[in-house]
Structure formats: C-alpha cells, structure tokens
Length: 138
Image (tube, rainbow, N blue to C red; front, side, top):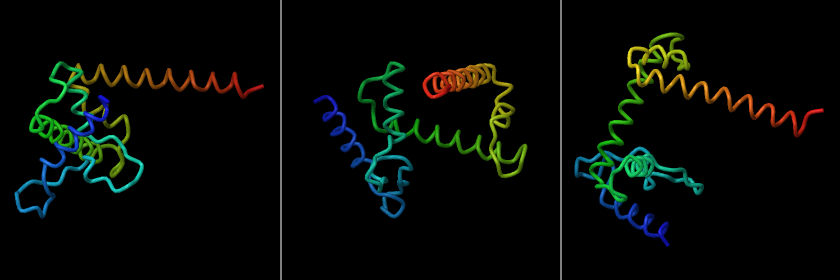
C-alpha cells in the first residue's frame, strides 16, 4: 500500500513537472524521470533516487518537487562537468578511474570516499572470485 502511495505521489510530481523542450513553458525535459522512459522494463529515475537520498539524509519523506529538481540538476551538472574534464585529461575521449581520482585529489572528503569505494570494490571482486571458485572450481 505504501508503494502505491509513493508511485501515485511520483506520478503527480511528474505531471507537475510539465512538458519537455517544446512545452512552451520554458521548462526543460527531465533527463531521467519516469515520464521520459519508453522501455517496458523500468529503470530507477534520478529524481526518485534523489528523493530517497534526501529522505535518508533527514528531509521529509515527500520533499518538495522543486527541491528534488534543483538537486537533480546539480547532480547532473556535476557529473557532466567531471566527465568532460576527465575526457580532456589522460587518454583523449575516454574516462578512466585514474582520471576521476586525479580530478578530485585536492578535495580530501571526496578523495577519501573514492579510495574507500575502490578498495571495497576490489574486496568484493576477490570475494566473488573466491565464492565462484569454491562453488564451481575443482
């Protein structure tokens, strides 16, 4: 029942967001919202993810749509800028992990978080490999 209420709330928010580029209201089309998806297998939208993260960090369970939109725009802008910068350094036209690490090296919080995530990723890879070898190996 709670899932139905959340879906209904999201659909209302999507309707409030309005039309796309040619809607005439000056609003741009949301990049990752449910209204833009055409595939039958639904992927989580950035707006829904931002909404859940806001709740997890102490905001209301149903934050204002404007707040979600602003945060979504900031996240997309940050990712776009970082990707463009990463593509311009290192191997041209390719984004590699080392390029991202290089870009954030002067921000201690981000650098520490990336190091933690990369370490955790390596540990998970080793654990999966050991698990697969135990189940399917000799």
